[in-house]
Amino acid sequence: MRIFTGYVGFFLTAALLVAAGGCKETKSGPDDTATDSEQDTAQTDTGTDAPEDTAVEDTVEDTVEEDTVVEDTVVEDTVEDTVEEEVVTGGCGDGTVNMGEQCDDGDTETEPCDATGELCAADCSMRLDLCGNASDDVGEQCDDGDDDSTDDCTTSCTVNDHGIGAPCSCTGGSCSVLDFTAGTIVGCDAIVSLADSSRTLGCVRSANDTTYGVQVYMAQGYCTLIAVGCSGALCFMVPTTGDVATFSCPAGYVEATDERTQMGMTITSKSCLVACDSDIDCRWNEAEAPDSPWTGSCGQYGCLPVGDAGELACTDDRT
Picture 1 (cartoon, one colour):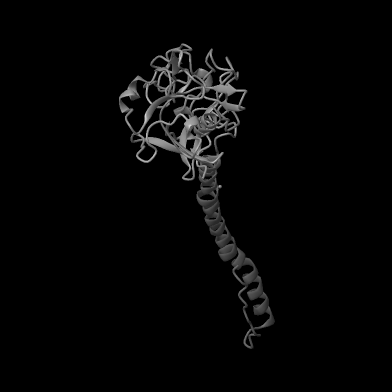
Picture 2 (cartoon, helix red, strand yellow; picture 1 turned 180 degrees about the vertical axis):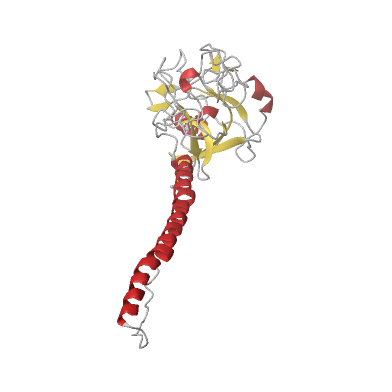
């Protein structure tokens, strides 16, 4: 069962291959005691007095009441309803900075590091084009104004804690694109002590192995803990490490699992990823390192659902 399709899949493959009112009716009959003149007079009085005393006065009162209803209820409520509707229905990506948004560039994408113009994070929580101006703007964890992600502040204006998810590299002749736990790993100082018999420190890096056709996109590296297990006759080809049966991630991190069967072998790999709520929790603004096969190109880290549970974690979905 393949649960996670991130870099763990590469690690395994590489290792393997080494939502109205009605009208009131009035009846009247002839008055036997009234003279024609009196009847005429009565008719004249009725025609004169009724409109003046009743119809006109009642009409004025009705008009006042009607005006009150229109002014106090219909007009004012309509204005309030319109304001509430704009707040509720106005969403990120509509090109308008609505309540609770820091920016809105008309889309719900987090632009890569080579994009230009007034840019906005996917959830409209941060002005991307302001990251790197050496000023702590809204939505930024830090901003040191440089293009070095290995110091205490990354180029995505996130704090570099040198732990899981931090940028990293490998030094020494034993570094291998087929084994991300080999060599001397630099940049993951905060998680070195967490490596034990069940999990090994690893630095997953961008790689393009043309021999086996395997590609990994992890701009500037990704610190993690890894365990790889294998069962089958050809497992001597696989650089296993740690113990997948007892492997676990530190609290607050997402465990990614990949299991596949190829060439008669079943390989299981587990690793740890950074949990996130939005792209700005990840290193979205990251350029590929000098030793990357895509040197200078922009990475595409994002906050993406991982595994069957759909937990959100920082990773590059091209891997």
